Figure 1 (tube, one colour):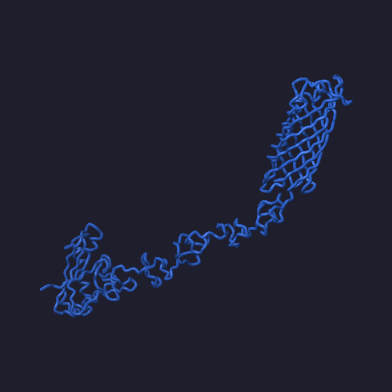
Figure 2: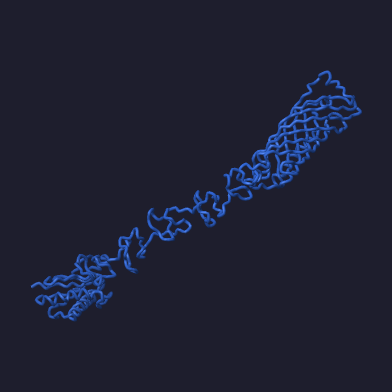
Length: 486
């Protein structure tokens, strides 16, 4: 008896492990989900008692099962069951030589079922029942111990079953199963012998009726057992699994999608529209400037408008009508290197000293009868580096100065050249003299009387700034033009 019980137990465990490993679950509504099954079956019993020879008897059963919601191949159910029948045995050593015990039982259990496909459903179940039994001989006489009430003819029993259901329609299956009922007492045959309790095997065949398996709760045309989206609103178009259509695959069904043609892979909001993080009207997947401030007008790529094309967007541009190609500062305004109020692209005198009044061309303004008594030219800005050749940009300044000199012939001017302290005294003295002479030669070429001009070379003498810094040395490299006081 113990060997048979152990073999059946391991057979049940192996069946469950085998199907759980070989049948891969899929994301599909299980056909048995939320289904009620009523089963009737019948078959034979094989008693496991103290009688040596097993005789075949009969049994009939009925059960009611409810299977819970499940996605995948496996489903669990609760089971209530009951049955009747006979258990018999034969042994020439005993008296009587044969017995027939009538049985009635009822109990509760659980069922674990796996759908191999839409037709075959192997299962295992286990339960606990209460069993009433009535031992008799072949003539229908009560056996001695039962008759004199030596024991209670009711006992608890443990139930194990393994079987297969074959679906012949959506609501009907034919079933084949084998079961073991193991009692907690040893009196099915009216004998108590050894340490093993009595029980019996049964082999049965029957049919099951299923209720709710073909329902379509949301009326979308897909039955519940196939419907992955069982609560679809009425009238919404669905696919073969009962889920609302999502034509663009963005995760928002068509009936809720306000942007039904979103390209694949684009992130969308709850309305199915592409995300627009900065709210500029250009979706993120097209937006080349994703952090545009709120309210700023943008172009088709989501970037702020730049009407004059100067690289500074309109909302930051303080000079919105800058001509094409003109260099601008961070505010979008044309550069004015000498700070005279005339932008570089219009300034004909780009190195005007700070504070000098200028005309529309950026050149110093010289009023008639007004004498400029002192004027300084920066060596770096007006001469070639290390040479005495005038740069063209200084011509307008000297032209204006020449006008003043010709209008004031009573004045005499000193043109003095200076250098920084780098290099020898002799070389610096020569260079300062050559630069002063170059200025004089230009003024004379513009009609100034040479006799009114005196050239002086001071080299590195009389610095106006420190020679220890680059800035200071740049200031010391200069040509000063002054009125000679009488």
